[in-house]
Length: 464
Image 1 (tube, rainbow, N blue to C red):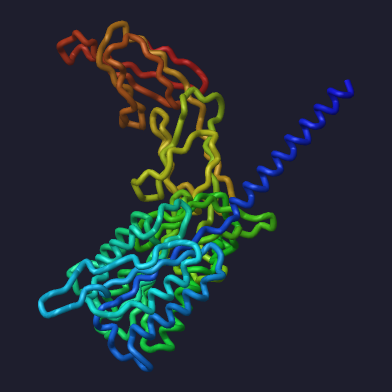
Image 2: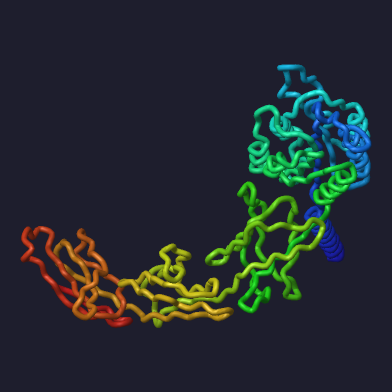
């Protein structure tokens, strides 16, 4: 007995140890930051020979870029690589290479000195082929399902090879190969700056000191931890709304970037979510109906607040008595509009944005309720009468239609099954008329009609 007890205790302790180890490992993995991979794409075209304050543009660019790469040696979860273009094929009259680009130093651990050394070797000589270089850069990032891939393009000139850098950048972002690139223009003519803004986040470096500042800003934005808090505001501008899905779309590509279910923490405050600061976002909060906030820009390295008006109340549909219908629902529309927002089931309590809605309850006949008001944090209850049942015996097959009597008018409710001689139809309380003609009767004068009344909770026999 004692040995069995000791064995059970050992097994329990072992299971507990394995469970704790799993939870700790899982927690560490969940919190592990993503690896950031930065590919520097450097312009090595002839124009980089131009003077720029204290030296040639290429000398200044490679020196400052080398200093930046050196500073990244001690930064964890960051890898760097270098691609250049226009640096191996010299431009001569009437001859240029529009494929002159090369990955000089691929991604890898402790490759910083290789990049710095290669930067010293590059000499400007060719043309400016931005589009083709970006297209080839897509192959420079080894497969990784959880990495942030960033391109930093450094150039002093516009595309010279008839490519479309904007289209290439957009395609790479849509495919999820890269995030929105950074573009640093070195002393660009103001007339061509707009051509770079569609490629990515554009920065104008007018001189050497500005270039260093811009490079620092770009790397800071690429690496700094950025968080956001979505405040779903009620009608009192308080962030009390929660428990709703929301999607962050890339405003440039239109592709979804993040999905979250909004949550309030233990103190009742919206919780913090990690969001990449690169690019703009369109946020869709999946309330009913949905709300959208466009062109959201986040400040890198800080905690950002995003406020969205999302005041909600609830709707509850119920029946006064036993529900004879199977899966009874109501179509919900915004008041005055025809677009269906939701098929609301009976006995389901669901939230809607505050406002007025038109309901079409799918009973027989339909119940139309216009301008139903949904108020902040209130439950709007709609109660409808219990239906009755019309037990219809025609005796023969035929064509029949049921109408509800509304004063002197008849409003069609439903048709009978032409292949049946007996039907049971669930109807709301009211006065009805059945119009029927046997299938084999070839004259309209053989049409019959009968009036009947439906009472809640009762079955009414309808026979000719």
